[in-house]
Length: 361
Ligand code: COI
Image (tube, rainbow, N blue to C red):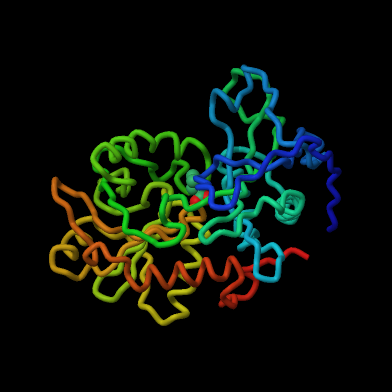
């Protein structure tokens, strides 16, 4: 189906960040946004592109109080032919609908989602940064402007997409990856099975801030989350999925329900299998990781996410001790995954998998 979204141009476009500016993550927003309404009985309607602007929302709007919302994250890149690349946007569309189902938000046609992403990126394509490690981060989200104090699913929603020119999620990783220092979190938990851990909703992130803040005070960039029930099994690293290479085998947690099914996680699994690595998706005890660190078989560890791409782990802080991984040197597999994924995304490496790179006409 063809979608045509009316465009209201921004008459006062902003100055774009000068080449060489440290972009950070979510500091520089573009000139336009995509907006679409949902009303019960009418479905999603009136998709449109409008100037980037503040929202006018009633202070009693239900999303502001009870957190019925969702978001997604993907990126756009400029390829060497001057065209725009997206990476597996269909995966974001599918995940959006899984999140929506959990959050009692109505589903959206996957093609409509992808068409909206393409339309807004096309309008603001001059904002796509071309410096190494930089990209245009695409943030689709859904909230409800409905006024109500009842704890019930709303009947009215807004779907909005905003865009931000970004650098690496972990500062400094633009030009050269570094190994992060990671606090193994034993007190707080991110998500429990039966909750919303597999969904992309704000509550999963808000509840993790305290642990990240405390980890920072202890000199770490992020936390490694353990499972909610027994605090025994590794789950995620901060806002990303986690991989460990132990004695030649690469292990990531299975999707237990409390883990976000990351697009980068899935892409890494497929690439690693294709490259012939022994890969396991299973529950991985922190005791097994620490034992491997002690006996020298923990060869590499890294986080994967749309925002961070591949972020190697240099040191684990656990039980009052520090456990360096690979002498804090970025491992070969982490580097190869980064070079391949980011290379495919920016179009300097031939796509290894059909359909992953979507180039706009
Ligand atoms: C992403 O990797 O796209 C995320 O959603 C992480 C984000 C919370 C920074």
